[in-house]
Image: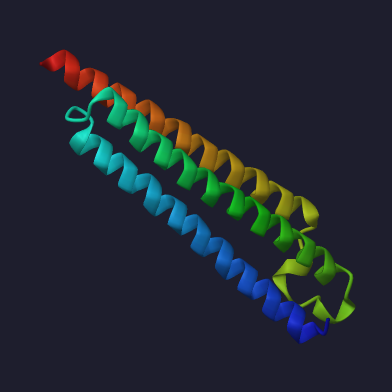
Length: 131
């Protein structure tokens, strides 16, 4: 792989990672807004069905994000192996930076997922008590 191809692949991977993460955030907030507006109107079965759909989509986005980031860390290693690419930010900072972001994405996405589930069921419970 030439230097140009490596830089292009890395930039494309970075764009894809950002896009996948923003898709996750959009799904998460759409679920939170929907839960806020409709949690008290849904039956228990419908709440579980919506939660199951949310879980499937969330896990798909999370795993895609983590696998894409893992590939991006592999490209960072290739950057560090080439002296001609010292000018690029991916060649500095060491692999620990990529690993840190990998863990950060994992914790953020799973934390958001668990928080959304707790919110849905607490919101539903509080609305049912108010009746």
